[in-house]
Image (cartoon, rainbow, N blue to C red; front, side, top):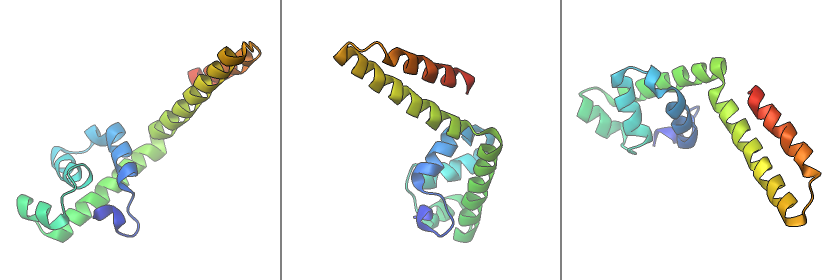
Length: 120
């Protein structure tokens, strides 16, 4: 599998970056990248299907990884998504604790986290 090749991103990382930036790739890049990441096809299978070499598929996927990584380095949408998700989980936990113990002092913390989310 391509994700196990040294220097390549894991399938989870590839999928997350693709979810955010995949539409910025060309149609051909998207098709081949999806075949590797989402359809779990081998490089050989894709090469045969596309009429290119296995090395050509590998190079294209590696180039797509680089392109998607560069978008993330500039835009940081995945990073912001992960931060927001973690903060939302904190809010959920604090709200549950407050409800369980009728402790309204946690509301300040919930408000602070909500403010942080709105600044992202």
